[in-house]
Image (tube, rainbow, N blue to C red; front, side, top):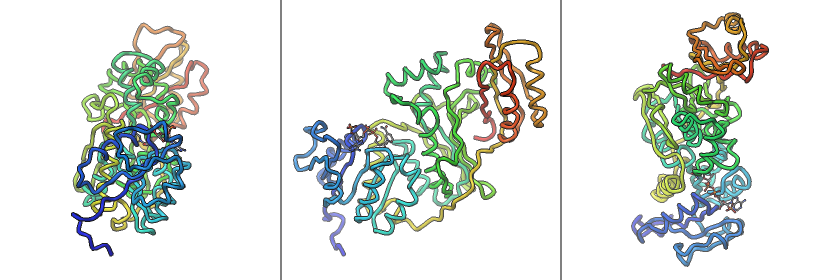
Length: 429
Ligand SMILES: NC(=O)c1ccc[n+]([C@@H]2O[C@H](COP(=O)([O-])OP(=O)(O)OC[C@H]3O[C@@H](n4cnc5c(N)ncnc54)[C@H](OP(=O)(O)O)[C@@H]3O)[C@@H](O)[C@H]2O)c1
């Protein structure tokens, strides 16, 4: 057993895999640590690593394009910042099996393989920490695991994708189309060349899976959570939402109730005076609800090299201090639970139609057939009659019931586009 006191213990050697936006920002913070730091950057791995070399990294750091060499090295902690499932999964599993600890910001990987990798870390006496995988620099994972461990959390919800939030607030503030807002987000560095993961909800869904496991103690697979894209939201939806005292945000929510996890990622109407409405641009927000402590909010920059790197280095320091992330905690059972997206709520339906008599009656009839009550009908003047948008709001009804009615409505011949359906979350948040 190592008898060295914390003051004299040698610094832990840290190997970074992936010297991109976050990896280089982590190296920059480590380079800036005082000499007494318990962490020492020892290896940087990247494909074609020579083009990545920077002068501010200490001379004794080994640069490598050989993952095998780094995994077999004397590094104590491997920081995986390559992204994606393969080969990151294999590298992390091998580092853990060799008794090393791992820190990662990879939500996709942790959402899919988190429980298995945590078990592997436990088995081999290491740790795996992933505080940067949700909400970037906002320390929400640590807060749910540690700060709120005394409560029984039953709900987490939030704005977990900065790209969607940037695009939605751009449409809201400037009245531009989705395509134009997306192009702007790409130019500003807030959206990738392929924005699918962000705008179609898969990125937020991976984060919700992790929050469900850590906060609600429910093991959920990403594919089980229904996901709805923000692609069909237009400026007209903000016009109508404002009339209803609401705005639109991509909302990720999960609730543990009656032995189920209710979960979804979708654009939704939220009251204009709610905390969600105040989250603009690329900010993130997570709200947790506990049986005893009530609601707690966490907010801040959900992405960006520096804020994400802060979360990674905080995990490294935790490991160095011996808190050992997930692996050394007493095992808190997480159950595999059935998942449903069948939340009940009020709804906003926006139709775009070729105008002719009888349209409202046909829609009202289809809704009534499925026992759904209309609350209000909104129609602004001045639109082209060949593509006339109008909105129907519904009283509280289960998502499943609405989906059955929408299957009938989609068969009607006056629709110009697929109708847009969004929950109105006036009481749920
Ligand atoms: N950026 C953020 O704001 C943010 C926020 C939260 C979490 N994250 C997560 O952090 C991780 C890293 O993100 P990032 O933004 O830093 O990505 P990035 O800028 O694309 O960096 C990834 C680095 O890994 C290298 N790489 C990729 N695949 C490789 C392979 N097969 N072999 C060797 N090197 C490889 C890339 O090299 P090349 O230069 O050759 O491509 C690049 O240098 C991801 O899991 C991401 O989801 C990022």
